[in-house]
Image 1 (cartoon, chains in turn orange, purple):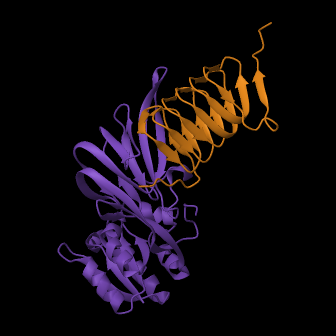
Image 2 (image 1 turned 45 degrees about the vertical axis):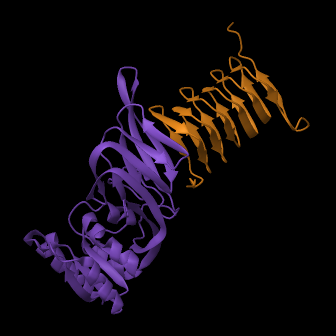
Image 3 (image 1 turned 90 degrees about the vertical axis):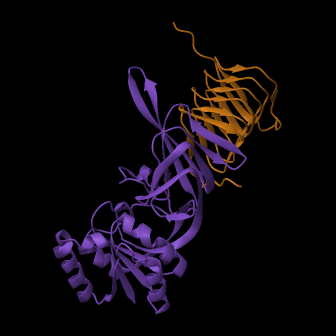
Length: 125
Length: 249
């Protein structure tokens, strides 16, 4: 049984939990809880309220929630200050805001074209 | 050639004047055809199949969403074009297809803009608009891949177009993408207030499980069950739409 995406967004709100391997052919926004692998051919947004207990694969990622598993991103992975990743990250481009937590190995396969940048929060005057 | 299916409720006296105006307009536009009046024990399927066999190309439903539900099997199976003249309520399908009420619907019929749209199936029953489920404990399962459930009680809709009269374009699904939108509404606390949240996932085949038997509404018609198998037939229905249809393809 195959799940087909229409290129439109899949949205999983915070009041919903998913168990199993979830795949989408479009963009995905997760605010709820997922226990299982998440794969999106489009971009993925993992909001502050989201928890994912397994691996995440996507084109680009904007992560503010908690992931307990490895993250593999084709393009850019952007971690905001509330992001917590307990697992390895593989991505071509990484943007990390101050406060984000990563407990795992970071791999950036295409070193020549990649940019790793750490954005520090400014100290209040 | 046209075949007009009148639901039994439109034969009520309160629709007499509206019906007379519609019939006059149909005559003026040269769109006359055989009229079949549905009755309690009259099977529309056999009648429609017989009329299509005699050369009818367009089946015109004169009634509401439930009237469409009564004929959708026969229309899809026969390959005829479906047209609507909305009379009574609810008429969500006509609204989304851009078909105005009463006499003006006859003009949409004569303009003959045809779209091919998907048709959903729930436990073998076809539906065009969508399915409304009661609030309760349920889960949605996508084969062996995953299952999803609201953390607390939530409500569920399956949309091919729209289940209720749409409030905005976001409430209307694309009926030509071979996908049904699974929409779960949950309530979350936000400070002192409860706010409504909507989960939306496009799927083409899935099952819905309830903890006890429930009655759901598919195109306004009741379907009972505890487990519901749902899938979609891609562009199975040819239907006449108005210029002001609300869905995008």
